[in-house]
Image (tube, rainbow, N blue to C red; front, side):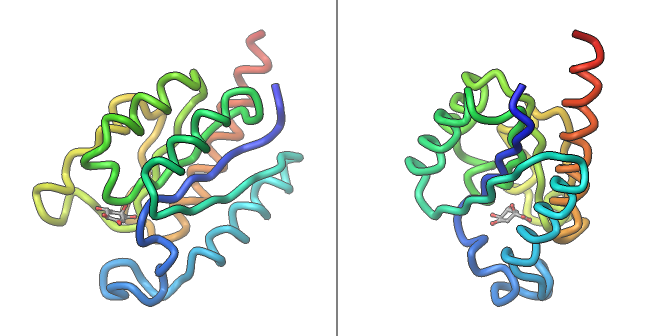
Length: 151
Ligand code: DQA
Protein backbone atom coordinates (compact mmCIF):
# COMPACT_ATOMS: atom_id res chain seq x y z
CA UNK A 1 0.00 0.00 0.00
CA UNK A 2 1.35 3.49 -0.78
CA UNK A 3 2.17 5.31 2.44
CA UNK A 4 0.37 8.37 1.18
CA UNK A 5 -2.74 10.24 2.27
CA UNK A 6 -4.87 12.63 0.22
CA UNK A 7 -6.61 15.49 2.03
CA UNK A 8 -9.38 17.04 -0.07
CA UNK A 9 -11.15 20.30 0.70
CA UNK A 10 -14.31 21.65 -0.89
CA UNK A 11 -15.72 25.09 -1.64
CA UNK A 12 -14.95 28.23 0.36
CA UNK A 13 -12.40 26.50 2.57
CA UNK A 14 -9.68 28.50 0.79
CA UNK A 15 -11.03 31.44 2.82
CA UNK A 16 -10.68 29.80 6.25
CA UNK A 17 -9.32 32.40 8.65
CA UNK A 18 -11.26 35.21 6.90
CA UNK A 19 -14.65 33.60 6.46
CA UNK A 20 -17.18 33.71 9.36
CA UNK A 21 -14.43 33.58 11.99
CA UNK A 22 -17.01 33.24 14.79
CA UNK A 23 -17.93 29.83 13.32
CA UNK A 24 -14.76 28.64 11.61
CA UNK A 25 -12.06 30.38 13.67
CA UNK A 26 -9.01 32.40 12.66
CA UNK A 27 -6.80 29.52 11.50
CA UNK A 28 -6.12 29.26 7.78
CA UNK A 29 -6.19 26.26 5.46
CA UNK A 30 -2.43 26.71 5.00
CA UNK A 31 -1.97 26.11 8.74
CA UNK A 32 -4.21 23.03 8.55
CA UNK A 33 -2.05 21.75 5.67
CA UNK A 34 1.17 22.23 7.64
CA UNK A 35 -0.25 20.45 10.73
CA UNK A 36 -1.46 17.53 8.59
CA UNK A 37 1.86 17.22 6.77
CA UNK A 38 3.80 17.27 10.06
CA UNK A 39 1.53 14.56 11.50
CA UNK A 40 1.94 12.38 8.39
CA UNK A 41 5.71 12.80 8.02
CA UNK A 42 6.20 11.92 11.69
CA UNK A 43 4.80 8.44 10.90
CA UNK A 44 6.61 8.03 7.57
CA UNK A 45 3.69 9.00 5.32
CA UNK A 46 3.51 11.55 2.51
CA UNK A 47 0.48 13.79 2.23
CA UNK A 48 -1.11 15.78 -0.58
CA UNK A 49 -3.45 18.58 0.46
CA UNK A 50 -5.85 20.03 -2.13
CA UNK A 51 -8.73 22.50 -2.24
CA UNK A 52 -11.19 23.33 -4.98
CA UNK A 53 -14.40 25.30 -5.33
CA UNK A 54 -15.41 23.07 -8.24
CA UNK A 55 -17.35 19.84 -7.70
CA UNK A 56 -16.04 18.32 -10.93
CA UNK A 57 -12.40 18.98 -10.00
CA UNK A 58 -12.95 17.38 -6.58
CA UNK A 59 -14.49 14.31 -8.25
CA UNK A 60 -11.54 14.02 -10.65
CA UNK A 61 -9.03 14.18 -7.79
CA UNK A 62 -10.98 11.56 -5.84
CA UNK A 63 -11.20 9.22 -8.86
CA UNK A 64 -7.45 9.58 -9.50
CA UNK A 65 -6.69 8.78 -5.85
CA UNK A 66 -7.49 5.07 -6.37
CA UNK A 67 -3.96 3.76 -6.95
CA UNK A 68 -1.95 6.60 -5.45
CA UNK A 69 -3.11 6.81 -1.82
CA UNK A 70 -4.03 4.59 1.11
CA UNK A 71 -6.71 6.87 2.54
CA UNK A 72 -8.71 10.01 1.84
CA UNK A 73 -9.37 12.69 4.45
CA UNK A 74 -12.14 14.96 3.22
CA UNK A 75 -13.90 18.15 4.18
CA UNK A 76 -16.29 18.47 1.26
CA UNK A 77 -17.76 21.62 2.87
CA UNK A 78 -21.25 22.41 1.51
CA UNK A 79 -21.00 19.51 -0.98
CA UNK A 80 -21.11 17.15 2.03
CA UNK A 81 -24.79 18.01 2.36
CA UNK A 82 -25.70 17.87 -1.35
CA UNK A 83 -23.39 15.76 -3.47
CA UNK A 84 -24.25 12.14 -4.26
CA UNK A 85 -21.63 12.46 -7.03
CA UNK A 86 -18.84 13.00 -4.49
CA UNK A 87 -20.19 10.11 -2.39
CA UNK A 88 -20.12 7.88 -5.51
CA UNK A 89 -16.56 8.94 -6.37
CA UNK A 90 -15.36 8.20 -2.84
CA UNK A 91 -17.10 4.82 -2.90
CA UNK A 92 -15.53 3.74 -6.19
CA UNK A 93 -12.01 4.35 -4.88
CA UNK A 94 -12.56 1.62 -2.24
CA UNK A 95 -10.22 3.68 -0.03
CA UNK A 96 -11.00 4.34 3.63
CA UNK A 97 -12.55 7.78 4.01
CA UNK A 98 -12.14 10.05 7.05
CA UNK A 99 -14.54 12.98 7.17
CA UNK A 100 -13.75 16.34 8.77
CA UNK A 101 -15.73 19.51 9.47
CA UNK A 102 -14.18 22.50 11.18
CA UNK A 103 -17.49 23.51 12.79
CA UNK A 104 -19.99 21.34 14.64
CA UNK A 105 -22.45 20.68 11.81
CA UNK A 106 -24.97 19.22 14.29
CA UNK A 107 -25.22 22.47 16.27
CA UNK A 108 -25.98 24.56 13.18
CA UNK A 109 -28.79 24.86 10.63
CA UNK A 110 -30.76 21.67 10.04
CA UNK A 111 -29.61 21.43 6.41
CA UNK A 112 -26.04 20.94 7.68
CA UNK A 113 -26.98 18.05 10.01
CA UNK A 114 -26.87 15.46 7.21
CA UNK A 115 -23.74 14.54 5.27
CA UNK A 116 -23.86 12.00 2.43
CA UNK A 117 -20.20 11.22 3.10
CA UNK A 118 -20.80 10.12 6.70
CA UNK A 119 -22.59 7.00 5.44
CA UNK A 120 -19.29 5.58 4.16
CA UNK A 121 -16.79 7.38 6.44
CA UNK A 122 -14.65 5.39 8.86
CA UNK A 123 -14.79 8.39 11.20
CA UNK A 124 -16.32 11.86 11.34
CA UNK A 125 -14.61 14.67 13.26
CA UNK A 126 -16.46 17.96 13.64
CA UNK A 127 -16.37 20.99 15.89
CA UNK A 128 -12.65 20.74 16.70
CA UNK A 129 -11.53 23.57 14.40
CA UNK A 130 -8.53 22.81 12.20
CA UNK A 131 -7.23 20.32 14.81
CA UNK A 132 -9.94 18.03 13.40
CA UNK A 133 -7.82 17.58 10.27
CA UNK A 134 -4.92 16.33 12.38
CA UNK A 135 -7.16 13.93 14.31
CA UNK A 136 -8.47 12.55 11.01
CA UNK A 137 -4.96 12.12 9.56
CA UNK A 138 -3.77 10.39 12.75
CA UNK A 139 -6.78 8.08 12.69
CA UNK A 140 -6.21 7.33 8.99
CA UNK A 141 -2.59 6.36 9.71
CA UNK A 142 -3.66 4.16 12.61
CA UNK A 143 -6.22 2.36 10.39
CA UNK A 144 -3.74 1.89 7.51
CA UNK A 145 -1.07 0.48 9.82
CA UNK A 146 -3.47 -1.90 11.56
CA UNK A 147 -4.83 -3.10 8.18
CA UNK A 148 -1.22 -3.87 7.14
CA UNK A 149 -0.79 -6.03 10.25
CA UNK A 150 -3.93 -8.06 9.45
CA UNK A 151 -2.76 -8.86 5.87
C1 DQA B 1 -17.94 22.84 6.88
C2 DQA B 1 -19.42 22.83 7.29
C3 DQA B 1 -20.31 22.97 6.08
O1 DQA B 1 -21.68 22.96 6.47
C4 DQA B 1 -20.04 24.28 5.36
O2 DQA B 1 -20.81 24.38 4.18
C5 DQA B 1 -18.60 24.48 5.07
C6 DQA B 1 -17.59 24.06 6.05
C7 DQA B 1 -17.01 22.84 8.11
O3 DQA B 1 -15.82 22.57 7.91
O4 DQA B 1 -17.45 23.12 9.22
O5 DQA B 1 -18.24 25.10 4.08
O6 DQA B 1 -17.68 21.67 6.14
